[in-house]
Length: 151
Ligand code: FES
Ligand code: FES
Image (tube, rainbow, N blue to C red; front, top):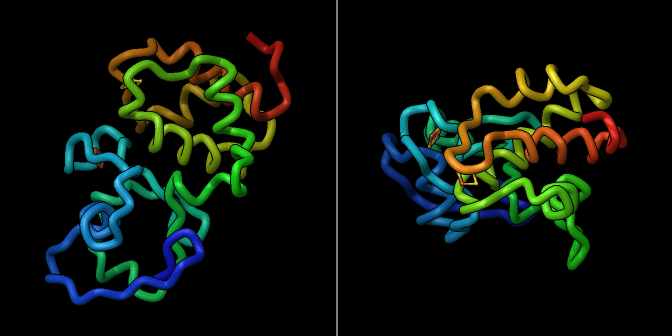
């Protein structure tokens, strides 16, 4: 498969989850594991541009596909607009949910470039944050969509 534009190839057991492959075989530890059971969204990545919880997919199922993790979003030293908005809006505290939150938010805006506050909240309902109360995360997504003053 390709991860963040680089080809990677390893032999894995059939039961290896994609999130474990990304972290342990490819060594990209920016993708977090929260629950291992598709509840928290911490492991959200993109497969062929679509947001997916990587603990719900076997590594072997991603064979031949294009994977993007948080580490693949920035352009050199230039943060992706969603990363920049999270930074500017203080949309994180411990940061554990952040990789998944950012990936899910990028995907949300791809599907709905000008969401309402409610649509952002509904769009991110599969991603849990124990710290922020969500307010600044929603604000960041609205800012990244060009609706900075919407809340
Ligand atoms: S670790 Fe994948 S959803 Fe929680
Ligand atoms: S910032 Fe801590 S879990 Fe979201």
